[in-house]
Image (tube, rainbow, N blue to C red; front, side, top):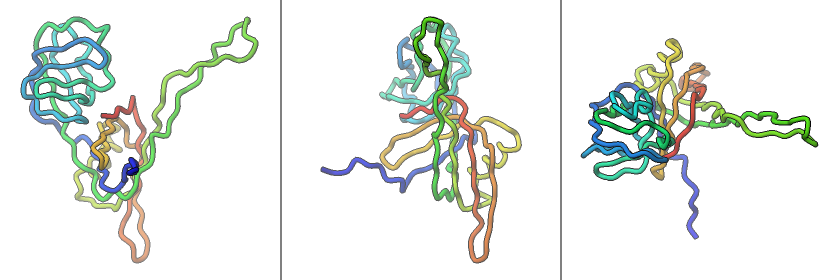
Length: 212
């Protein structure tokens, strides 16, 4: 039986560095996940879109979810349950977030957070009773060979200064994509005799990690 293990070789780390042209929305279906109709949208699973100008189902405005299940004229929004949202009336657009690969990455490690614990014990409890609270997805660490002119690395260094939340994607060799938002907490550079300059990046994840 062939192994289903996914090779780390070929994985790409990408960071948001701009946006593409908006794609008009013609319909939105309530559900989990939420499904959007947009004729000839051209999106692929894992693409991240910024939603705006939607009339009726206004809860979607300002969200930047990942695209998941795709047909020629529809796509679903990963992790978005619109069952309790208002009814879609008209209008709206989804603007694809443009990504640049972070070059020269040698390894990555992360998604190391965990859910918090809530104490729900009462006077009637015979022992401490707990339930899980919100999930903290932790962070992601990257090791790379430092290249000042690399667009992806430059975006990380800039975000460390501006404290801007950036969108990220990890594309695996089998086609799976993880999308998330994060802050750049650290970008350090190191060097040694007879070695190239290296860098270490520490991202702090804000919000969920969505797989498509």
